[in-house]
Image (tube, rainbow, N blue to C red; front, side, top):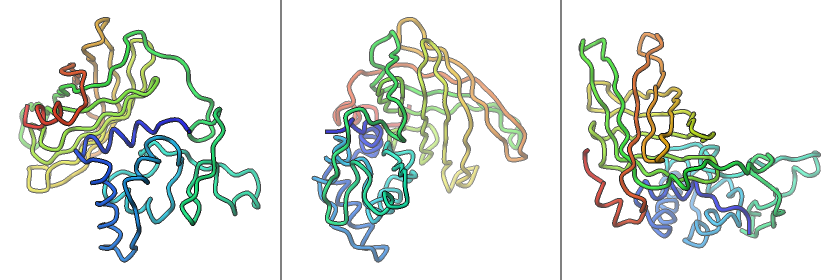
Length: 259
């Protein structure tokens, strides 16, 4: 068995889908786009357990459309081939045309990288957090606050952050963050897609983020940076406050509302 794909698990959890529901959504997407597939719960189980390190292309396209994220952001390994001949065969841990799996060595890591072993000193940061940032709207001449209840999944020193579907102060504005923990310093990127019928008319904003993790491990505070509509660089405060250690469906249901 390979290393579990906790990022894909986090994305599925943030979509409030079971493994069977994700498989069904992938099948329906394939039919809608003229690329029928036979994705089943077992496929999703293999992807999340790490038994399959890279799905077949027909699944990749539907996975990207269903989750709204590129395959590189879904925690799968990037196949690395040493020779042209090797490129004709599935990579270790990749599904073959018949759905078979080529086993991956225990020392392998996504992208061929050396596995990172450094952990932070606060235990796991997985759970449900309240994300809160402040920004200035030049068009409206005022300061505003954006809030989301988010699901945080930690795997080693990586944090995958995804907002719950209905848990935004600005309706239909999903937020994602991909962060790295180094001691008390948390650094990474953020992305938010604004509501199509809102003031920003579906515009997508993204940028960098640096936070300091408090000694309790229950709050992160820092600054965001990103580009405005005129390509000027903006910044402002951002904080994440711990709410619940559980990422169960019941816990997510409790927080799946506007903050």
